[in-house]
Image 1 (cartoon, rainbow, N blue to C red):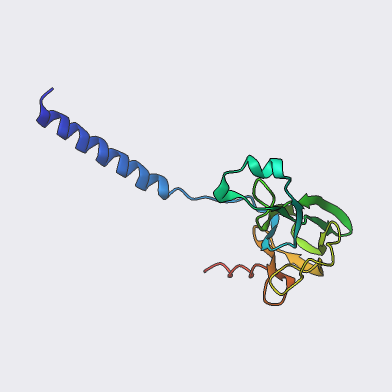
Image 2 (cartoon, rainbow, N blue to C red):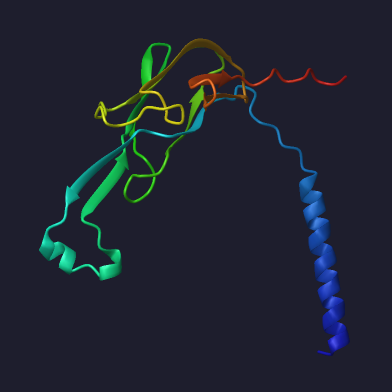
Length: 186
C-alpha cells in the first residue's frame, strides 16, 4: 500500500471515529425515577499522636552507623477513632478508622457513601477516639477533638447527595445538604 493511500485511510478512520464519538455524546441518559439519594461522609482529621520512647542499649547503638546514633528511639502513631452512623435509629456504619501510612502516623481519612431512600430521615454521626491519650499528649487547636457528634433531621432528595464533613475552624461535624433541583424548563 502506498504512503498516500495509508494517510487517506488514516484520515478517514479518524474522521469516522470522531463522528461516532460526537453521535454517542448526544444519546440521552435518563436515570430511573425512583433513584436513591446519597449520604457522603468525607473529611480529613488530625488525630492525637502518642509516642513511646526507649533508651537503646550499647549493643544496639553499636549496630547503627555513627552518624545515625541516637540514644533514645521513639515510635509514634495516631490514636484511632470509631465511626458510627445511625439512620432512623438503626446503625448502618460501625467501623474503626486508622490513621494512614504504614506506621499509622498520618492523618485520618473518612470517605464513605451510603444509598438512602429519598425522604426525611433522622441522622446521627459519631466520630470518637477509641482510647484516652496520656496526660503528656497535647490536645491543641490543630488536632481533632476526642469526640464529634452530629444529630439532625435530613430531607434526602432523589439523585442528590448530602455531605457530612469536618469543619476545622469550628472543630465540629457539619451537614451540607444538596440544593433542590431547578424546576424543569417549559
